[in-house]
Image (cartoon, rainbow, N blue to C red; front, side, top):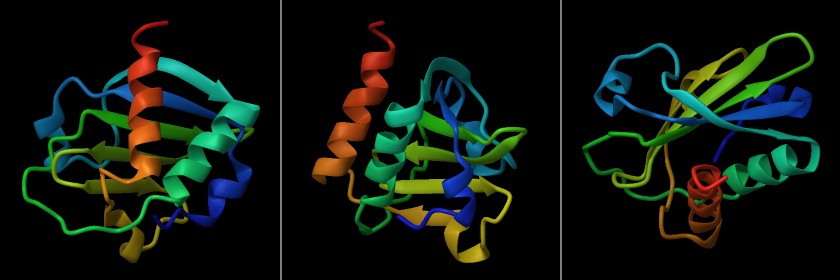
Length: 125
């Protein structure tokens, strides 16, 4: 997956559980409840998994259940909503190009399965 250049400035990531997935069809930002904060190595590992997500064919639903908010030292850098059903992702934020805003990923890839596993583990903590 193509990440914005601000990825390099990321210091922490909020893991977001999306309560109203239909809202994200037209939203200009990620909406949901923060269920975990990942910093340092954990944040870098998560971004590496996202960057390793291979593209795939997009289905139509886009009802995301999970998202991340990447933060730098002073502000929010970018946000990503993931729909593991339709293999779609939406990215908002500083430095996000038109090409990056709507992307696909293979939800069955090892990187996607690991990312989803980490998301789900946040609810168990």
